[in-house]
Image (cartoon, rainbow, N blue to C red; front, top):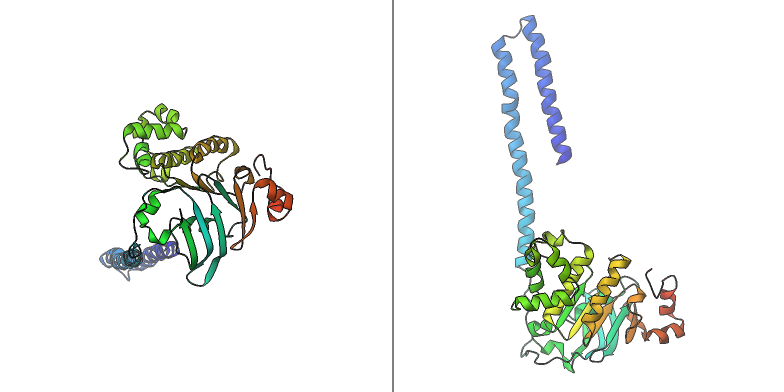
Length: 337
C-alpha cells in the first residue's frame, strides 16, 4: 500500500503538471479559452477522488476480512472440556510422576518420546538442555495445556485426566520468562493470582516477592497503572509482580519456566532470592539454561530431542562427564554465562 500510494500521488501530480503546462500553452496560443482551461484543472481531483475512495475501501475491506477470519478462528476453537466422570482434586501434596509419556504436535511432529521420571513432595526437579529439546512441553503437559499422545501423568497417584481442569490448574503456579501484565493497577495484576484475596493478603504477597517497598514509593502505590504488558515497569519488577501473584495463589506445585533468563546479573540475584522463598515447601519444576539456577536442585534431568538422556543431582551428573558436563563447559556454574 505504501508503494501504491506513492505511485498514485506521483501520477496525480504529473496530471496536474501536464494540464498546467499544456493547457497554459494552448491558452497562450488561443486554442483554448480560460473557461475550458479551468474546467480541466477542476476535473483532475474530481476524477481522481472516487478512484482513491474505491482503493481505500478495498484496503479496509481486505483488513476487515482478515480480522473477521481471525475472529471466526477463535470462536470456532474447540473449548477445553473435562473428561467424563472427572472429579475435583481435594488436597494436593505435590507428588508427580511421568510414565512413558509421548507427545506430538498436529499428530506429526513428535516432541517427547518415552519420558519417565518421578518427583517427590517438596522436591525441586530441574530440566536442562538445548533449546527445542522439549523442556517447556513437559511443563505444559502437567496443567494440560497440551494433551498426551500416550503414557500417563500421575499427581499423588491419580491420573490428571481424571481431575477437572479448574481444580488441576488451581493447584499449579507458573512463573514464566515473559510475565503478562494487564493495563491495570499493580493491585489488580497481583489479584489475578487469587481474585478473592484481601488487601492485606495482596500486601503480604508483595512483601514476600520483594516488590512492596518499590510499590509504596510510587505516587499512587498499589493503584499505579502499569500500562499494556507492564511497559512502565522494568523486567525485574514485572517478574516480581508475577512472583507475588503465585505467592497469593499459594499452590502446592510450582513451575519456573526460564524465569530469570531475560534478566541482568544484578536483577537476577534479587529475583532469585524471591524465587527461593517461593519454592520453599513446594514441589517445583525448574526449566533453565543457566546451570547456576539448577545447581542445588534435588534432581536434574537433561532433555535432548525429546528424550531424557541423563538424570541425577549436580554432583552425580558432573562425575559422569556426559551431556550435563558438556553443557556446563563454557558456563560459570556459580554465576552467569
